Image (cartoon, helix red, strand yellow):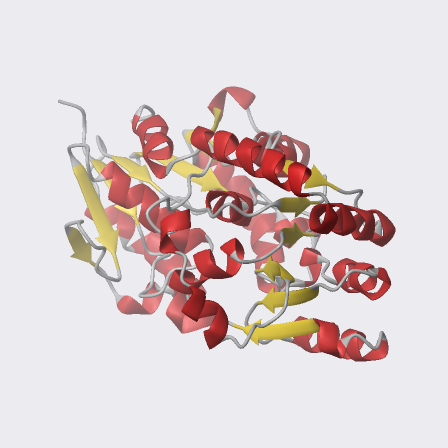
Length: 358
């Protein structure tokens, strides 16, 4: 029987997003295996957890982040034995334990786009080198993340294992599509969709410029919680005189996304950098054509299943949007390739590969 694995789930809250989605799905799949102790500030469906302080969760914003660091460094070491393995589904490691530790690196946005995550920039600059040296194994969620890791830090490549993300196939599929969801958001015209649009590196300006020059009748639906960046985009839409062609619908619960994806003419992904690019898989699983920029980890994710446009080239994006609207054969071909592509990814596969490291 292998030694116990203790999972640091302090990144979770009641409504996980980003790293929390990753952690929750991986933990639920790892629960199928034996000898795991899950330490979490919230309950996880189908998983026995030992609850820890709620104040470490992302619900408490910057205070939660600070509390999470303190908890990982000064409380977690007293909950493990030296023969245990600590698995961190995110970028933390405890410096004060002799237990083996496995860390997960998702991306380097705080280093590449410091204005997006100013408070994390110093963490990545000054503390991350210590954590990486302390880690026994490092999981990277894409080959591109591994490449960035080796570029920014002096890390032994033998410590690194690339394990791709999965996606929630129980939620994101063509069966969970309901016309009433489209009516709920008062969408009455043909549209393309953009999801997760609250940060500048998502580069939505490019899509607005493309839409301005698009002759075909097609609107743009933008999903993303209110932020300074969203306000900037709304101002740009006004400046370009395309307010009537862009619909900002704010935050959308996950259960509504399959319908919004499926009824769209296409999912547009103009991002300048991603550690993985999970929305690509979600859109593909819902039978949606993906139009994607060509950078960072994205080619690893979309494979042969996307219509690719040049980075920061709004004219090329406009031409690709026009193609998707007018060429039904191309649409059907891309959708077929998308369904084949997503077979490579599942949380079950992710957990199985992670479990091999313990």
